[in-house]
Amino acid sequence: MAIFIAIIIEKISNSGEHQPRAVTYIMALIFSTLVSLTFFRVSRIGSTLNWSAFLFLALSMGVVAIAVIRALNNPTCKTSKAVWIASLYLAVPIGVLAAFFQTMAVVSFAGIGHIAQIESIKLMTVTALYGWVKGSVVTFIVGYQIMESIRIQLILAQRAAPRVRFKTRLSALTETAQFDITIRNISRGGHSH
Image (tube, rainbow, N blue to C red; front, side):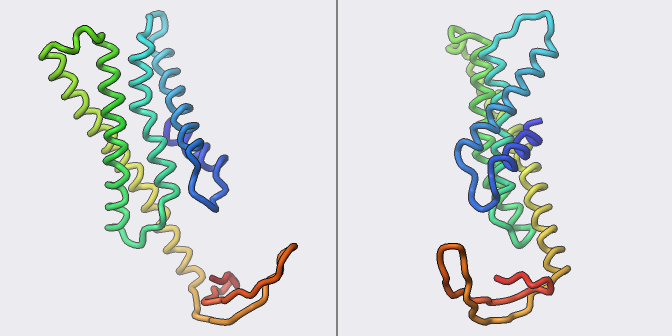
């Protein structure tokens, strides 16, 4: 659900002309966390919840929404290897966030008084490692799929309308100003750069 929420929020809040603002990431994280909390509440009807623990657990899942928005707005990678590298750069920090929230969930479940025990420290270490692996693997897979899909779509679009070198200067007129522009190439449909 975090993936779908991130896509919807990114498309609603971003015109595609600039990088998403911090509010876009925050909204995606909040809504994907709320969806996870709703799932926990529905799956545990009749029982009481440790809300702080489940909030951290939901946050550890919700950070995937940040990865989705980053992948959708990543500069286009030209090769599969570049997509691989970009996915790794995306996966590591998201994995760290997921590890932090997963560890905080265990602290909340266990209670602060039990953290000093050796078994609890081992459990927290294993939990942090689990959170990092879970967060980074899911982020890597999702990020790779999104960026590779965008890369393939752009390659197919280039083949459908190949660009021809065509350099010329033109005058452009807006409502408030007139200026000269330089055309470097043009496609069959007339789109220029």
